[in-house]
Image (cartoon, rainbow, N blue to C red):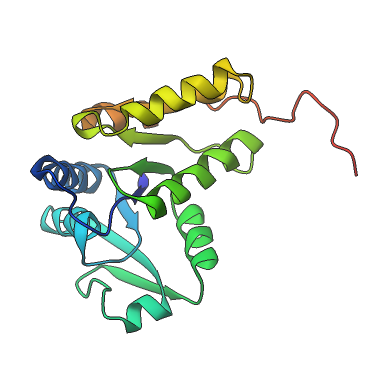
Length: 191
């Protein structure tokens, strides 16, 4: 399975974030290929280094401006250089079978929410999940529950999201993923 990882370009405040990135990189390498943003910094660099150290294949995808800023990892199996962030996200989506989110900031949130939205719309049928290190994503999980309670999201779209504290359990859930029907499948689409 080719797993795309979204995560911080910083290390975060707690050492368990780095340990989780290391474990994720090793586990993904054992099961397939790591696809990620191509950076050598923060958790991004940690997950890539761990996958490479475990003998895994790693594809990094990065816009040219960030490559020129010298934050690209220079030891990857392959670094794909694109022109824009939009191209980066499209390439990450097309190269991946699943989307795993480690702790991170606004860029991490933006990347995974786009993939969740695409899954709801039926643009893809790939699993999306969160490695909930030390409860980092507990507030987000509560917010998603609130979105369902307030009628802005059907429960089956919340239920398609994987939240787990152990990487192996998350990857097992990805392998067993059954996508829900697309959001508008019960309604005719108007031209």
